[in-house]
Length: 411
Ligand SMILES: C[S@@+](CC[C@H](N)C(=O)[O-])C[C@H]1O[C@@H](n2cnc3c(N)ncnc32)[C@H](O)[C@@H]1O
Image (cartoon, rainbow, N blue to C red; front, side, top):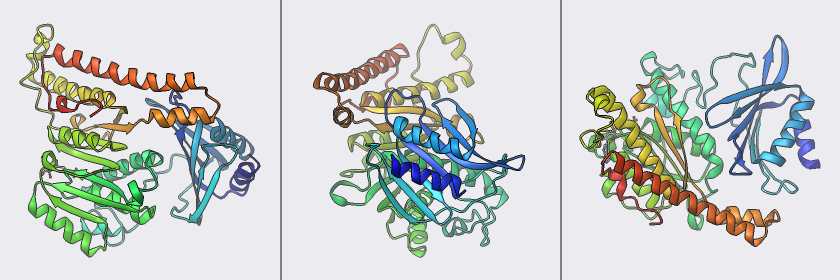
């Protein structure tokens, strides 16, 4: 731990930090999903604010430099396996599956220090006021980087999506199978603000080896997006015309959708699961499929009101999708995407494929015996079977047959 102590002392005592993010939970059962530390100035005094993200809440504590060193050591030895540290002029990544022998890598800085004042304006992944080629080309900002007022909602939406991509970053492998680039597919990409943003974030800012594909039904949109990608020299970004339901691929490491209408979202999820995709981020919309199917004598007095039936249809559709993904071995969270949007378009399904075999192996490295390893594997199987059972109960209670039904566990 000497190496880590020296690193944290250097960062906190020399006041070099922009932000550091702890990710990759050590224990599945751990409630804190992520921790981040950043410097803030409160009443003229510099403190380090630790932000703990839980599934349904975020909490904060403010520490002096000495306590921030101790807290960082605790977090990396007890709770998290990875840290991404952003300093003025340098980014550092710490991989500490084994806390006693962490791997530290360094590269040029990708972030700039903003104002340290507490309650400052939100720090976006792509800040307002910084010219970004694709946003200028897509008409979101002017050439000086000022976001046009009428596009501020889109700008905020893109940044929120990137924040979530940043969160799931530690779950993605360094590269795809056989050293291929990480493959990311945006299904129903439309004019592709999001597709360009993910490319910009992963390829341009993070310099990851990625190939990104945007798929949509509309030829004119695809032609336009390919031209923009070509002009911007975004060489590893391609747009294809096609139907999500017919799209074939040998693999994808991450699948994203943003407002892919109605069952288009189901086909995106079905594809992703069939490729064993590690991370799925999907913001559904227009969940109409089950509206005419739902039957429940108990709920009928409520469902005679179209607006309530509409809402129930949305929640039921996404609830069933979440259970199916769990039945297929994913850890699923439904998270608020952006509070600016209409509620119907406000929920993101965030799914990360769990790997019980890897968990058991890691437990073995940390001293677990065979019985304990077998218990980890059994628990994962039991969780998936329970989700499938709950899925069937819920589906049958409302007498519906959603498209996501086609998704079979272990297929
Ligand atoms: C509401 S738009 C969202 C576009 C973009 N993702 C965004 O959020 O800006 C939905 C897009 O999904 C596309 N889409 C709908 N069903 C599709 C399908 N089955 N296959 C491919 N694209 C589809 C539509 O053509 C449309 O461009």
